[in-house]
Length: 366
Length: 248
Image (cartoon, rainbow over all chains, first blue to last red; front, side):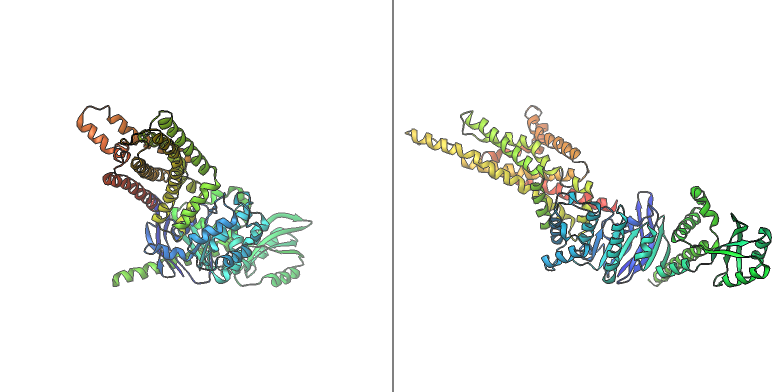
């Protein structure tokens, strides 16, 4: 549906997008994730024909955005970061203007009424946009993107500045739209992509650093192998036992103390459920296990690690110093996030290399 | 293109700026007409048109300053540039909307000439000889109107171009005023220059000197071509500005 090949965009000497290639299938909902200034908006602006790429090719459903901009733009509904609203128009006037602007041929009244129903703005249709709240304005912006029933819908940070209830509503709306449209969504909120998207593309400094199905990442997150265990008994011996236990790759005593029980953080090998074994081993020794708490690994940790890793790879300078205010989190992070992050980054690199090889061979053939 | 034209027309009338323009235009037109003809006891309309051209210095920026500057500031241009509309369509749509406002006001201001015809009629009834022409010369008025509209179109194109370069409406207005002042004053300055070739060059550039034939009721094809090319060049440059920004 959407095919981006070797996209490069330079602003003067500043490279905003550096050789990005990816494809989006029909009906897919893709989350475009990245820190501020990673090149998300630039990529979207190129996709929608607002900007032109320095080099590279963008095709929407086989139509090149450069050679047939009008044809490609007809297939796209776009909600920029700041909804492009004419504040002095009423919602109705605005939607009608968009209807005419896009040269829509669907039955006007029916189509607009349907869209208003979908984004729930029917009751404000007669009101002037200036007087609407941020949430309603955002929805009018979304309604604008839906006019003409485009097959591709692109949202640039659609939930910024909304209250939690509106965020949930908009996410539900996007999920509904994702059922019969191809949706690309840019955001730096991780729960959003996890909640809405089939696939996540993480981009940093203008490069794709990870491109993975959401379920794979979620599985990695859920495949939990870290626990906080509260065990009564002598701290040194217990720590030694934990470290020597087969199946455990990491153990550490934490400063927490509850009565005569100390807290230990342990991490098991991949695919091993250590809990039962831990219980029996400890009971053999007569040390009581009084608490076992699974430690979640958040998508945030993966994201930060991926981004950090890609940044570090690039500059060969560790960016961990940046996170001094999150010392505690950084300390408890073990190899798990790094593993997941590394595999994601490697996957992306491998893909890139393969593509490069492919294009090389193609060039050779030419 | 038509959608953008319609939207611009509507926005002239839901914003104060359209009414301010219409109001100031009509007041200027009637005052100037009154002063140059009735108060001076003359049927000659040539100074009316000359003064109207000077009035355009402040009137045109009112029409053009917000055309692109506001879109850019409010980020609504992103909507227009990602819609299936060509850049030329967008620029021409906006230009035509401003031109329609201007032509509309010029048309309405024609009522200023009615008193002249009425008075002339009364005067003709009082005189016994009809060998000399009494009253305004219709061909001069029509020529003047056509010339005024052409000059207006050229100035609107210049204002459109300047508006597309900034996101500040005030800056757009001030720069437009300065540019139009220069174009108009070149004609005035040329009258004080003695060196023949300098004068010839200034006259060639001047907007005012080209107007002379229209004011005399002659349809000057060269001047028509001159004004039309100014309008075309600046609209073309506006399109180029947007093209360049896309690649920037």
